[in-house]
Image 1 (cartoon, rainbow, N blue to C red):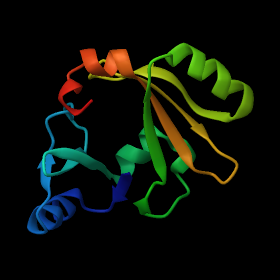
Image 2: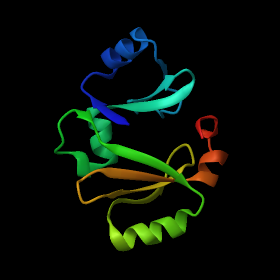
Image 3: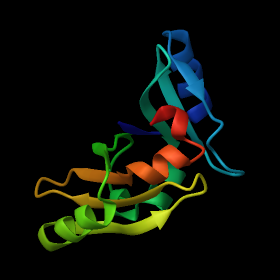
Length: 131
């Protein structure tokens, strides 16, 4: 779950108040993103509205709320990209983010966006504790 919110500080305070932990350590300077954790396990991400629009412009016209994305980690990143690119609209080409995670995004026929992560890169990244 990626959740686009108008005020991340208010959302962080809310989610903490209902028992979730919030980890902002993966954000780089200027990023407005926060990982929600439930019992130590990743439960979702909070993004400032502008940050999610910048990351995935395909979502720019969407209202604030859940972005409707699914994330999958795969062993054969290139093979998965090759297959997806033949059958789906790629909305963000493969990139390596500041945590050294390789990912690409595609859209299904109903408009849902899927993020595909390279499992090996994820496990070797700064995000490995969440892999």
